[in-house]
Length: 424
Image (cartoon, rainbow, N blue to C red; front, side, top):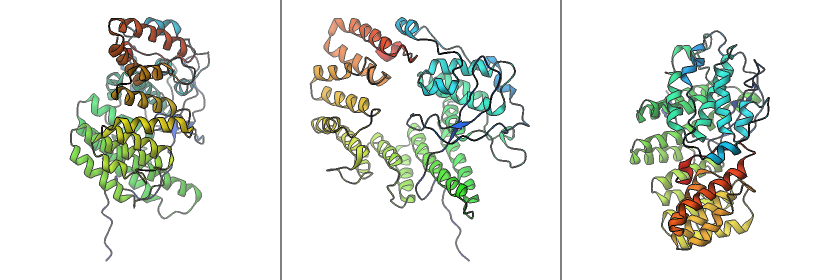
């Protein structure tokens, strides 16, 4: 009698493809419209597009009005927002949908409008409710309001309960991206890190069951489905490792990552996941394993490999070598526009560690006018730190000038930053 497979639910073989997430086409002043699915955010936070599919039939038999109660959604704080952002932030055009606001980086407007639609009459459909909740929560996270997002996520309670199951198929009707997000948020909201690891394990068991149900089918849609569920399993495996790290179980996270790498049959086809795996190793202090995630330490192939090689040099404390690697990347023009600010910032941090503070400061200042990229927390925080090191008593004035510059450069996009982003 052949031996049955004993793989854990988070182990998976083979390459993967991206999954989809729903979007919403309703604005605060509208009643309802057709709901479609796109992938608004990947793990890295980038915007992607996917094929549109109808989701209006999701969970029509269930009553989810308990998720539209106004007391669930809290007002967003304004007392910690620098005044220039309150005056520069332009209101979005009429008819702009929450998903469009999310894609444009107008997270505050997206969070507010999502809550308005959720609590308006007539009540949104179940599919719209789930999409709006996702937009609301992910926008709060981008606004550095993670504790508030964790609190609001508790309104959904146990996402494995019967109310979230299709009466006929008994499958969970919550969108996958929302289920994954809720695992992390609810573990923080309930103050139980173990809840997060168990949640990823439960999702992995569900994903593996869905994958096995497609094993014996050979159609084009089934092939795409298998790739999608394999991708999701790999993603859950990496998230579970992060959950173990959050619990302080670093040895368990390392063992889990090694098991995950072994289950992939040493394939390197998915460079995004390899990069995430390497970053987790760096965070765990295992730089050697991080380097083995890309082909060669001396001449790593591709932008991902070169970036990880530079990060490994920083993790080893070899900042002179890190400066050379970051500068080489910056001069090569092989990176995308989205990667340039990250490369520039890491070069500036490396320059700080070798004592070139003025050069580091000027490099970060070149990114703050909004001409090429919008400012972000790490950029403004690091530049504020440099002002404290270089400007002495003039540091506060320099920070306030930085606030004015960033607010002026981001006024059209609606980006709002907080005092903590500028160490004020």
